Image (cartoon, rainbow, N blue to C red):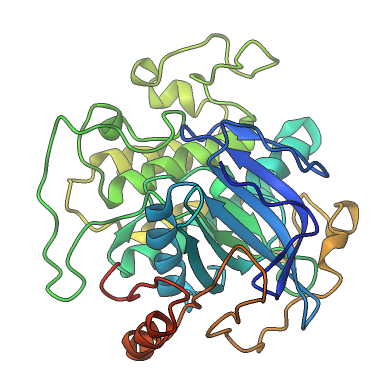
Length: 377
């Protein structure tokens, strides 16, 4: 497990300020705010840290599985130019004691899961749901343009921005399960396969993935549909906590849940969207404009005003950790300097053109192992 204490300075630059979550290898979360003792089962820990020179708050993710850090930090670096994707500041791993890796990125606001649970009735109103859906589809489309699928579309993996100009912008996070679905240059799609181990959370995964069919773009879109229903109802028929107050009369397995039952009492476009997603072939490109158009049609029919007002209000959230909000034009950190007596030596995320030279220089100094941001993605 990773033992990093609150107050510890990483690489002479980033001071650990608080703990956000700890997760085991199955994704189970352990929340230990203001505590330094970590569960022995945790393999992933996410911290609030302060960039000492600037005073800016960042998120620092540590993982006991080093290869996940290599892979995920590389993807953050690759996607950070996309709207609604966090900036990546650097990645490293420690191999001398129990091995672990770490990388820093923009510190965002609460996840959509937390926001919906904190909302009145533990669900969003229709207007907020439609505005969020529009952004989520756009994020998924942007990811797909990079030839990757997320494989973990769920409310936990989308956050709003920190208080300020981006407090209502939805960001996509967590790419440790992301997979290439085609060659980025040739556009050749991966082959169809069955009898695959399901990837992602079974609460949110598509029926095809549940049946062991290899994931593709259609599955990200179907998972988004489950999110949309969840936002309005606060639960899905197959969720294990169905015993609590639910708009559904009974618990049903996902495979036994008809779209009519899933989308009952919702605008008909929700069932239309789900039907469309399930009609897609393995290598089909979703019509993202059509999907957004379905929900925008509801927005217009309901007479909602596009005023950027959501269910949540930043002033009501406990988000005082962003006293120093990153400015939109703040420069990308190309490397973290090593501290005198720290456990971590850091190699920053670099431009793909310069990655080989930076890696050679770091290795020559004998301080870090690093990786090429192109070859590893």
